[in-house]
Image (cartoon, rainbow, N blue to C red; front, side):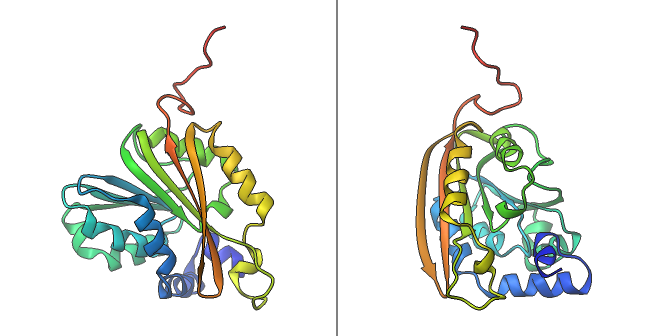
Length: 215
């Protein structure tokens, strides 16, 4: 039940989970830094949760905009409450959905991220291909996950983080989904180790309209 409330928060426990997610934002700050935002960027946060990363992005997007998608209505309500002014001004769009079925048109975004939501994508490759579909050629993607640690309390999310083999599988899944320039970094943040995997969307590759070249 504990893990389920972080995958798709609902009800009272979901509201509590959202508040817990919002208490620490150092990893969100790092991911926003890695996105290297420009004033005119259009940025997507997949699994946006309570909207902390979106809140950090918005001051950078002078003429651009941000969008968040999450499978939880509870999280979208918290994200909307945290970013009321941006929603009213049309600078932030929030939609119900998941990584496997992103409710946005092709090549709609210049950058995208997912912070601690990749664990719940079933299957992983569908989510990556959907991200490639909505990204412009050359669009930057940053995926952040917790590294698995055994030197932390049993209830710590890091106990169920990614091992080295899972990080490697994530890296290797990016190329067939249409991404190149995969770069992985690690940073210790408090009692957690955060792994950030960055990549760039290639033109055509991984898109539903792309076909294998005829030999």
